[in-house]
Image 1 (cartoon, rainbow, N blue to C red):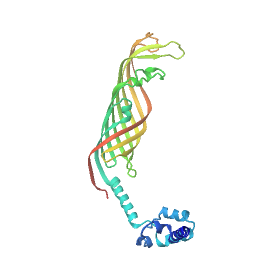
Image 2 (image 1 turned 90 degrees about the vertical axis):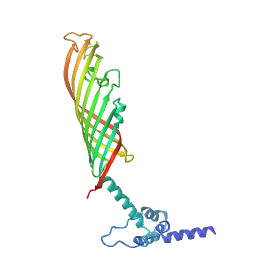
Image 3 (image 1 turned 30 degrees about the vertical axis):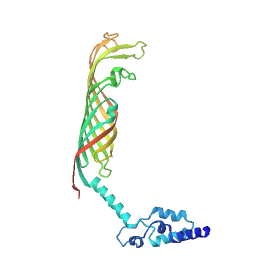
Image 4 (image 1 turned 135 degrees about the vertical axis):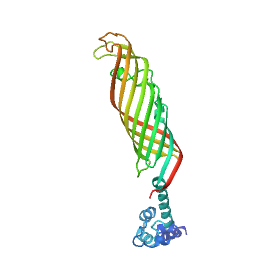
Length: 295
């Protein structure tokens, strides 16, 4: 008894078409072809795959679903998806945006550089200022430098100021390019250095103090990930061209004479260099204003 019922069920589904059985009621716009100039009906991928794969008698079920209209997306679902997409487009791209944001660069905090920024966005442009402090993240100077006095980066104290402008992509509204100006004032006092001159087995010890100014321009590319209307995560990367202007003084030296590795005295110089830039800002927006849609 069970076998005939099973065969009868399979035959009914096959002769009706998979889309007709599982797709619910067939509306008039599914059943009738669109008039000239109207958009074409969308095929339901699940119904098509089921007709081709799930049933061995697709030569029967597939034409039935095409003729009855069960193969096509119901009008209500298609209209709802279009309305949702249109609403999102209007919200994200057509409405002018104006708001302020307070942000912190989490990546700089990891490098012991606490900071805070303020940003103002108007449509596809955003202007921002960021102020931070610089603290040494090592007790010793850069031991990998050829001449430690040239790159004593981990031992600086200082302040950092950044001003930037973001240009958001009108088509990908959360992506942007940015230009950033960087100004840093750095210093350390009475720090010990150790170097080994080329071709000399003896080590030279000396004490230095320094004041430096860093000027730079960064080119950045970033992506803004919105968590809510008020909170977002801004991840960016790029490259910077920086110029470090230095005034440093050698106050003690193990050989200290006029012909030594680094004689006593005051020195001035500058170093130009390229540097990678990476940041991850956490922002909190407020004072939102949205104007009328752009025509």
